Length: 376
Ligand SMILES: [Fe+2]
Image (cartoon, rainbow, N blue to C red; front, top):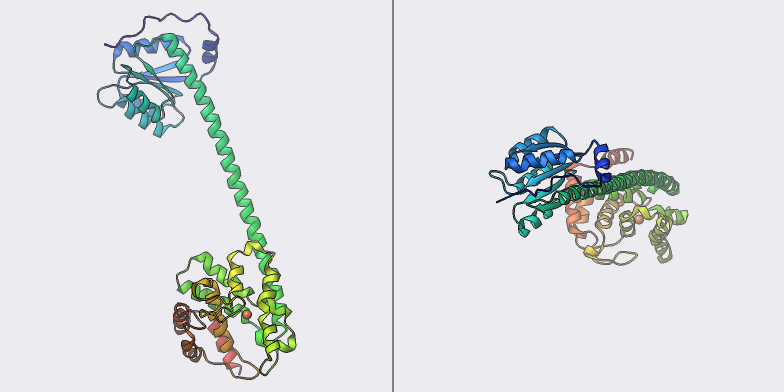
């Protein structure tokens, strides 16, 4: 049989009570199906400075909580219909700031532990010693203050981190576009050294991005391939003009000098660490899947996907471009010619996609091609 402790007389010290009375936010909901206990707790706690409402069932409690805001709930565990644990769960899901103290009819350690695990601050065992009740509620309120302060601090930190992250992203975006502008200036300077290079970087970038997109690579990878296409030959700024413009066959020394553009390009771009994977793509754009490329003789999947795509786009553009010693090949003739290089020079999967892109004229490069071919 549940009974209340007879200690209904206020304690001698009123310091804490005065504090409680001065705080209008000490709104307490008492939930208990037993009228005698509910009414006694309500009366007593009103004398202790709490603004008390009460409810005779879990459903009634949730209804009141849905309409008014409380700081504390004192809730019986064993009630007909909805149990105190269910009330606790639903009340906290609606208001995580609510401090809940459970009332158990017996010293039920399992129920008490479960209540604490579900977010109750504390529990009291009936019969309740009133001074103990008041101390428990004061501790719950104090804990709630600490929890709210901790949540506030965490929110401030989260907001600060989010704001700094955003600023950093803006700075990185600005840095990237500045890098691209500077790199484009370099590319223009490099392409000005040879009529055969003019527009090459732009076309490789667009064709590379079309291939990457057609391979269903994610948007970031497609853009990385595009940027790498723009920058892939930046190292040619360090190659002698007479070699770049030489009409005939290159000597072994000249060929080695041209190959050095990859190393020079990597040295130019190395400080721009935020380019990330773009640097790998550029590094790999002359690697062949059979391991006969340069500068590292990588093979197969060891070559980055961007490197394999750029190799295909670069080769395609070179063959469809005019040279001093030969006429440009048509796009269709070029893909037919390149078929014999799939698996040696080119990644076969990338080659298949290149062929599809050419067939469907998916890249802007062909608009430019039309101009190049018609200009003779
Ligand atoms: Fe190159």
